[in-house]
Length: 204
Image (cartoon, rainbow, N blue to C red; front, side, top):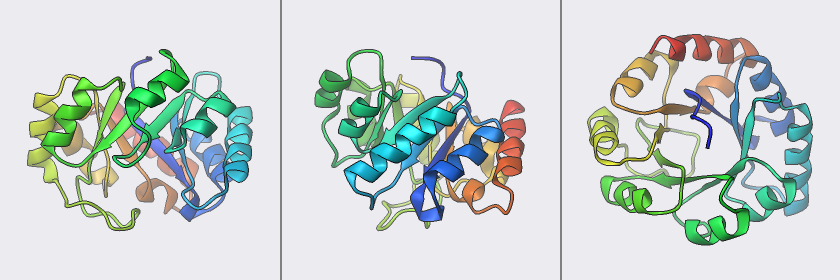
């Protein structure tokens, strides 16, 4: 796996067409993009992912949220799994050794378990209160994030309500990468906001 970029952008369909969102995020410098569309059919999601791959810069990594089948068919860089999705061991059997697999965790116990599994990074959150997810898990805060980052060996991707003003604190807590949804996609100029994020994280 290539080193994780510090910015992990999520093209979430709840904010609009993931293809249009991805185009703006790539234009702003994003090089690690997750495609997230919880309500689409398999066919629609596959088509969206294929269109995103067609416009992705050559050095960009694209992963699909939840759907190992779509990730496999589209030939993307990998998949991000939740606690109730296909087990990482099975996902690894399907995708092979070279694709990226990430796993969401919401407490230290889950993060320690993820550290033993065939995943490339451990998603940790929500760090702060978030409105981008239905029925979110309890907020962890920076102190618990730091504890998890100190304890697990694999790279940690922090997610959940993180704004650009909190980026330095999240990085100082030990997160390798910062996953962002609303603070990017809620902007009037998504490409410019992505550029601001990239510049900020380069200084962290």
